[in-house]
Length: 359
Image (cartoon, rainbow, N blue to C red; front, side, top):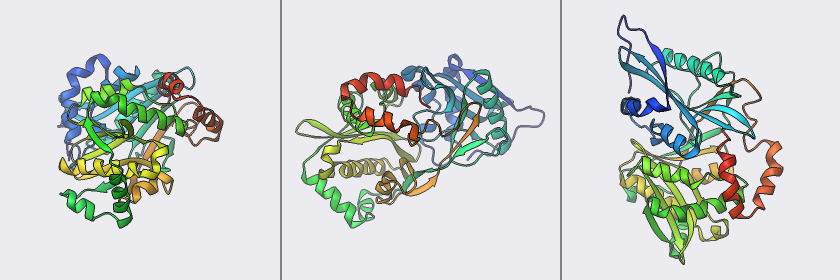
């Protein structure tokens, strides 16, 4: 855990590193983040700034609180912009959780103040910090807390993991096994199959899909720590997921299964393999991602034994409302229904350009 105080006589200052300065600062920032807690998700790694810039074209910034040449705080930010919705400053898009890593509340406050100033300089509609606890700052004038992170503490063996499941969960996994799905693990060589499942599932959900370039960039940036799992039947991909292995925790930011194959329990079988993978790597925790409390995905994750943890997204709003672009906004229900009727090929063409502009 970070327990640092600036040395006497050294003033604490916040430096805004633009994209060009990031490569030189990445090692120090990565080390600072790694030492911030016993368990740190890969989603906190500062190299995500490079991923988002390369794959989505976002301008990115690293806010670093420094004193005497030493790091005391870090806040990654991405400028998300597009013609449909406007401009936003986010920490960070795509990922469920990010925000400030700091040695103290005073450092947190300094970083928020500088981020708010940067948001004004960039003329964005709002600053969004995807935190897991409330930050006390006068400029953070709105919050969304309707979702929670669903996490499962992992045992040391896959046998103990299996025995810890409810009998109904074990029965569904066994049902999936009876269908003989082939399971493959890998990287870029599996992206076509991964993306085939993802694009169909996202179309069915009525949500624009990220371009394949995002996932290719993730795999290239985190070799060995990011990997793809694909389950297939008859040579056709049926379920797929992206796993991110951090320091003590594994998270699954993207997972999909074909709706038509729900009766086969392929999704249950896939998550069994994902959880096993995390245990085999010696991880202490599995993060299923965010869900609306008591919603369908919440219940799916809860059946595995996952428990809710806070998700506190805070905002400094200049224009509009914090909830305006959330998928549950009634304004977008008609658009979602239209999207669900589009051919998958068309959503693959249109989706990436739309979603890159959504915070």
